[in-house]
Image (cartoon, rainbow, N blue to C red; front, side, top):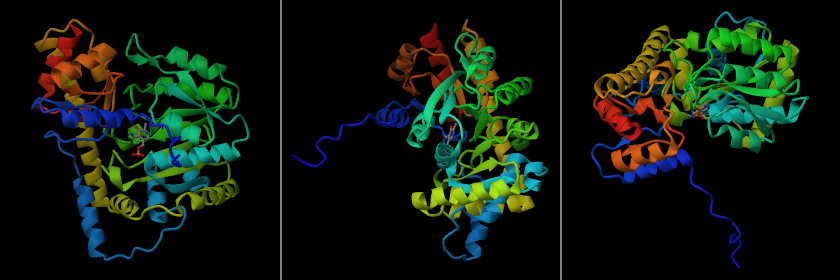
Length: 402
Ligand code: PMP
């Protein structure tokens, strides 16, 4: 027999499967609302102009291609940490944040998972919100952690189940690891309010839980990078020693450049140094050192005040376009097509995704009869909607929910 005869055929990735089906569709009205990447109002991928300028400057410098150190580009890591924790962060000023460049958010989560599985002194089990980004479970499982859940989304209101969430966090064993989406929760688009974050922070403190923040959308939720980092900063200022995964895929449109950071807030500089030494030991056999180009671009944008202001307005531009598509979609549904359902969650939810509340049979109809492609859970990427097709989408959603 052949050596690999026993290898079973695995299932395709659920999200990439949607894109394949979309590509095969010949209908001119077809819409792909499955992808998690920003599109401009013409449905095209968007490269930020601050990024184009940064690239040009870097090119003009004719820099070498030497290896970075194991933890990456020092200027990039420092500026990225400032962006996340705040320029006035005491934890940064006191040199007690261990940080490393990572292969975007996914790589940061994996580094964090591996670190926790080696050094977390209590139960090696991480609790995720229900639902969460589909890749969280395999990332943490492959890191050697067990994966559990806490309640998050309320299907009856299409909003946050704050009571269920607090109750679950309260009832977890003390010193549990909990994963939180810092902003623009994927896939639901539902974030806690500032007061709810207070309550969450209190329970986590009371129960001595450890919080791992996944921040894949800083700036993308509200259009303001400081506002979107509020939960993380609030936790740190309340004395939580959080871990953080940070990605520049969405907010700088650097998807394929794979640039991000993993960081861990420590109690002292000494502790930070020990943690960093172990991060290096963990990363070295994984990929030796991270890629150069994306880190240079982000460093350029974050260190030049003109490029930085341009970036802030471009982030806001992306967030605003998404917010305006939410408003338009709800408007068409309610006012033009007279849908009797409550669609407030479309505009209450935040970030790239909307959890529509569509049932699997309605999703199937939407795809088969209206050529609108989305994941089975009813999640649509608002970034895939434009002023030209928003009315068609509303009409189609109305048709399958009448
Ligand atoms: N976390 C969440 C919640 C995400 O939605 C994503 C992107 N889909 C990521 C992490 C990681 O993305 P990347 O590895 O491209 O930075």
